[in-house]
Image (cartoon, rainbow, N blue to C red; front, side, top):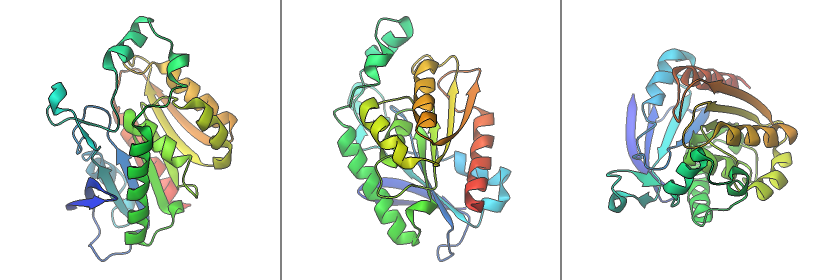
Length: 246
């Protein structure tokens, strides 16, 4: 497998594909890691998916961008973030000391900058691959899933699909306004019922918004916490295979 480190749209990225560098790619998959994880946190998903779905091997390019903010000074080592988070506040959600409904209406201060960077990455990627936006799957885990959702709802054209792994509803007023424009967009969403960081109810609220806006949501709930289960990886492989065939 080809494994390259490069820069796209000002973001450092790992790019993985089985096909030779000059081969024609039919689908690009951009997956954004979560808060506190190193930039290569999700890279292992690519070989897992390709082993399970060999029909994707010569046709898909995986791109794993590294978030712009270093968290080393906060004790996270190589961990990074798309925007700052108040972890104590999120932990308070678990104890019922804060309102999830209020949180989901907020717009994080660093979200616009993260959005611009990810949008720039997608623009450069489509130029490199000569793929339209309709052949780019956008997704991520946790904070990366929130960013991917925000960008997917704002692109000039709909992406090929959206993958939301342990994400939540954010920027609710704006997302509710933009979501109907993406009617018919295929979404894979997964969330653990025992998630101690982002409550399961926050994922249900996001699903409800997307479904009521006409998006097609495949929702995987699982007995577990803030993670990506094996079944979630299998479902992601199937989602990409189906998307490639459309």
